Amino acid sequence: MSSEPEVCRLFSESAPQPKDPTAAFFDLIGNPSKSNEETIPDLGLPADDGYCPRVAVGSEADRRRDAWIPSEKTRKCLISASTAAPGTFFPDRELLTMPGVLLEEELGDSIGDAVTTYIGEAEATQRRVLGAGDVTQDERGLRELVQNGAFRSAINLTARLLTIYGQGVGRAGHPSKHSPHSLQLWFTRIALLVKAKEFQVAQAEAEPFGQLDKPDLFYQFYPEMYGGRPGSIASFSFRLLLAELPMHCGKPKESLTKLFTILAIVKQMIRNLKEGLCEDGNPMEISDSDRSDSIRLWTGRETRIMHSIVNCALSLKDYILAMDILGQLCERDGAPRHMLLSALGRLHLQLGDISGAEVCFNEASEIRGTPPDLRELVDRGLLAMAHNQFAEAYTYFQQASHLEPSNVMILNNMGVCLLYGGQLKEAIAVLESAINQNPVHGLQESLLLNLCTLYDMESSKGRRKKFALLRQLSKYQADAPTAILEKLYG
View 1 (cartoon, helix red, strand yellow):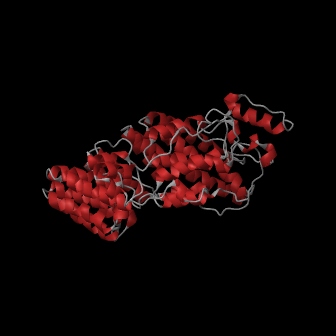
View 2 (cartoon, helix red, strand yellow):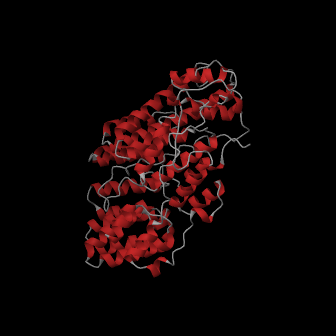
View 3 (cartoon, one colour):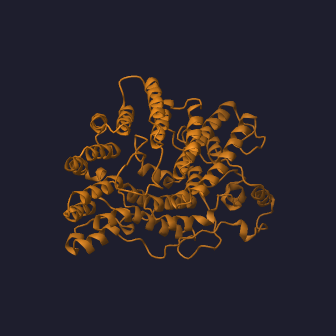
């Protein structure tokens, strides 16, 4: 038996963060609602557990990865479950996690439907996209769908796979057993629902999991199956996703409360480790090297939570909190200070504090040294834009684009510079070129929304050009959010 279901990292591997952390920071046109899109970049934090190799179930690496401090109520229930004679422990229903798939019908092909309605059935019949029934009905098939960008089909397949665990359609509110595999399927499903911008469905299906604190989400609840193994069956990434989910549904304050709750628990776990205990506070013997590895893992996870808090603070427009957390991150040992200072500078720009941004950018540049890398060129371009020096900004973004030609954020900003310089046709040409050179990568949401806005500004012929984009989307993409489709045929 492997120590981790293959599906565990499926979603995160399929949708990597942009190399430059500011992909969503200065998308200046095309989308008036930014509440769910402002993010600080991936600042180089290692992937969950990625620093140590996987070994057999029950190993120290597994114990470290799965450690968690349950609530007092859950802790008492777990003691009862692990000490009761087999077949004699029957917990109250309120202590059980009883999820189920709520979508009664499978998600359809939204792009295909749009093409049929607005261009014609003949065009739609040329579309080829993988469906849930076109792949093997297992994790391998799920991975194939995700890697092909067929997120809605992947969501449909997760529903089929969860039926095996008694957690499919119509099973919400019914007791069922949980395993690492079933919970990773749920993590993948909810992450895919977020990716597809089906936020309300994601929130409704996630509700039974709460904060992943109920007893049946811990190994100790199943002593016959796991032999007294401690820890959380649910992954840390799932825990973080559930905390961030309300933010996607327009409830950033709720996310902030949940994130600070998780942060407090992780800080306590790190304190326990430094005081000679194991993560949950039990006096278990851990070797010095294992203790060091545990502290490194949980310190990294603490950093991930702080990144999420910054995102949440930006959604709330609580810039003071965002700056405070970024400042704390800068002071941490081994922190990528030049990247954090760059992010802090961009935050100053959002506030209109150009001099404060310059201080941060200059300090980041001194740490980084010469020659300027992509991030520094983008910083200089953003600063020039803040000074309304659009020609100079365009030059910096152009230099950055030579280093990373497929970076959509940079191409978007080049278009913005041309637009504000009174060169509308040239701005359109830049964005169209990004799509034509690499349709699979270039047909991204922010670029499409911006290009549609420019078409509307250009002439009344914009609708015809939008339909051309819809044809390209149909040819090269398996899925697209509803907002893009509405913009294309609106």
